[in-house]
Length: 320
Image 1 (cartoon, one colour):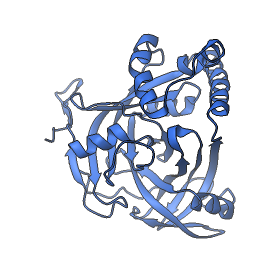
Image 2: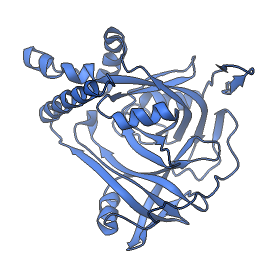
Image 3: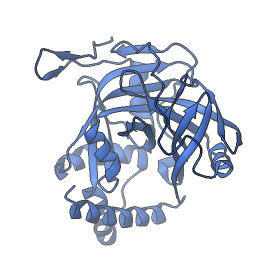
């Protein structure tokens, strides 16, 4: 059954009708250990970053969700400024879904910077333990991880559209639930004032991305929602790296993400770029990344430390 998925306008406030997606899509949304989130920048670009949705969704209400940290403030600030986001459920490792389909969810995100701790514990912990295993407890761990749990924010996305591609490379025509798929290609964008060429080491970035099993491109679509799709990194030169896949025409700002992950996310790596895409040539202009150890104790120690630092910063600037 497909719901209308459209935001109904009556001349005043927006009243949401809901989207009901297929059983296949629901199995994927509820079963993938990781997804890729794309949000938009003020300049019209997109940032792609991995998130752990841990199966959070409400099919009857037409929402999906994920958690993030108050310490990752820029992501939350961007979502607050422009709530249009996309989530790509694209990787089947170490989760519970078995369909090879690629599911792209587009919608409007919202979050509560001061969530109810009991609600988070009741909803998030069981979902997390299903994917991550039982949480460590005890005198030390309860104290060390208190900031990690206090630092969590639930981001809920009111779904506007769900696209289900039977082929994981997205070369087929998708099944659409909700608002009709935008058929127009996004208009080419004006080049950045600082130029369109690379600003990071292209050869190094290409080598790092080619080592990772999942590489995705994100950009703003014609209707203002981000689009995410799988790509491959081919040869590179001083001008940029050649991408293959279902690429948008023309020139535009775009985000690029490469990532891998192990069972229960004990061991993961991500490489992120923003840059300029022109006719399949991607010029990376920023880069960031992280690598987490494949050791649960070390990972939890690092998570606790980062959460304490992030929560302290969020409180200092009034975000929490």
